[in-house]
Picture 1: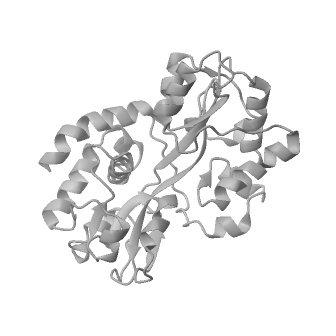
Picture 2: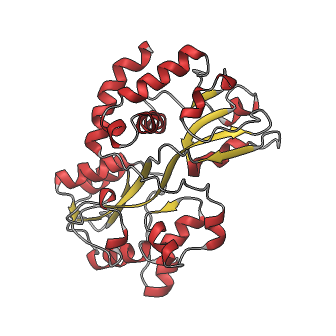
Picture 3: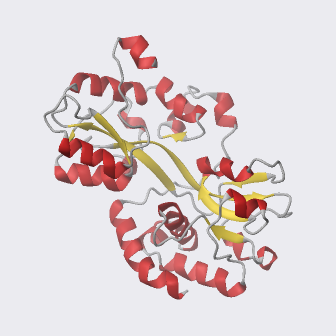
Length: 302
């Protein structure tokens, strides 16, 4: 509505619940029609896939230089917009000494307490949680290039009895079954549950900052190309980026906005703090595909 009021453009969101795969199908099947999407909001894999298929038109927003190099296509075919980091959540009523790093999770005091939110062979967030622990164990990019570090980490967690092989949900947290779990920082709020029994806290680990962001792209030969570019300018403006922040996600320009004091201070204060001096890792599609190929056969045998 903001852009509608400012620029007199009606924004039609065809399906707010559409998956990234469904968005690509819409671009392909509605080609040449008035209903063809002008822009998409998709996960990294689909942004890269669309670029390879020639579905996107290059466009660099005016705030382009604020977007980290690893989080955008060099030609401007796609660019990350909002997301977050893999974080550790815990119920402070159960966990009296909170973990501060992934390495801390190996401590015997966390026996029968550490979980993932799904099976990493099928759940993307669980898979990237394992990749985040690999970045920590491999001390940076080495761990992103070789998920073996992460597999060894989870093998130790399993043999020590710390790993609970149950897909964590708000219900398992409330039951005390999964008092510590890994998920995206902006998705942890749901684990507080409705009963008021859970005191859920979130910490971004000191030993790895693994980012996962949704990306924007302008659709090639779309019906309203100028409106598409105007929409992207809005999304990557201070105003647009602060809207993601107010929703609990991290906008991609956050670091630059904090330096320029253009961020929403109240919303920013509610985010879990990130460790100082730790370089974020945005795993490329190639790194993710290689990691998944190694993890899929190895995970059931841990």
